[in-house]
Length: 308
Length: 139
Image 1: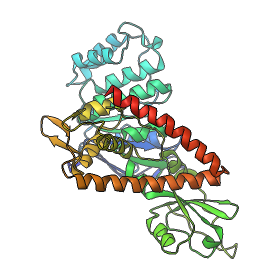
Image 2: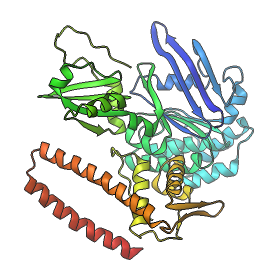
Image 3: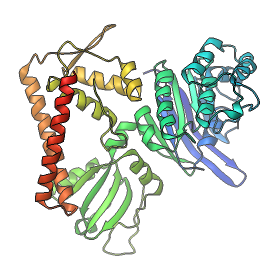
Image 4: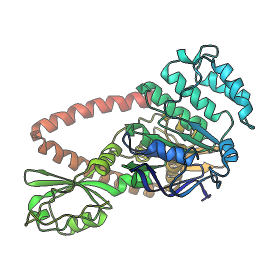
């Protein structure tokens, strides 16, 4: 495997008394696509800004294509395409004027490619940017981010504000224009349905911490919902990766990470139980708002330790 | 090649794609020698990660369903070892039967009577039959 194109290692960041990021580590191997998932305010944009060297981290290491974005900012920005959240572009310019304005900043700017993107994304050339639809503006932003043929692309919530069809088109553009050319992509999102089909890996950011990361598909193999009899659970320790517990009459419905051992144990004891595959949004929910207090115990005071 | 992805399904996308190609090979809808769409093409058509499609094709190749010819494309293989494809079919049927049992359990838990489940099965089978027939004709 080639070396990682994007590395974030043990990064922390506070704004005044607010710790926004704690011990955040993310690695994206070259040519892969990672989706950074989190609710609003989880720290996605801060992570991306630190990654691009736009704000300094309090501690930790950040590398883009092996380079430090703070000390090597010119070189780094030359090989990175970036689409900001809610990008405010110069609204009085037309796309063509914007291209002419931006091209000199990038040594590798490809004007023909930029025009190709306008064509491909069906963006009007001579309409003021303020008059473009949200979808057109996002696509224009993407075109701008890609017109200098970056090997690393960072997109901050590109799907935000797009309607369902524009989102699907955007996903297709991501596949067509980035993955096919071998670019490494990190993008943030809180729309989980769309993430699964385009990302190799996901990282779940919650209140400034990475609570789970992994390949999209192995995550679904490893996190399972299990239905088991309440009476049986009462006499048993909860599994280590317990994420969520709900009681339904005489049954317990739990979600657990790395649950294989626990499930094997259940099978060996011929307990009447059920294992359910979860969708990515359910897995995300379990990590972010899962509650583990309800594990039944004989003595109510017995504390239950919860991962992650 | 007709592939339908159910987004937000609890079955991973690569599994959905692989299973549909496999069953189309087994059912003879995809004939031996037929060239599958390129990785790029299929990824773009389905708006699915390129690496996912690569993994699906590689898995199908390792299972003997298709052959990856460098620079030429991915081709459906004839069921050379009938036994291996029969074993494959048996495995798939077992898997299906487990899924079916789980569905039945869920239906019963939802309060559906066996007779209602039976009626649902009859309707679904009729619909599916005519869909498969149409697909075969258009191939």
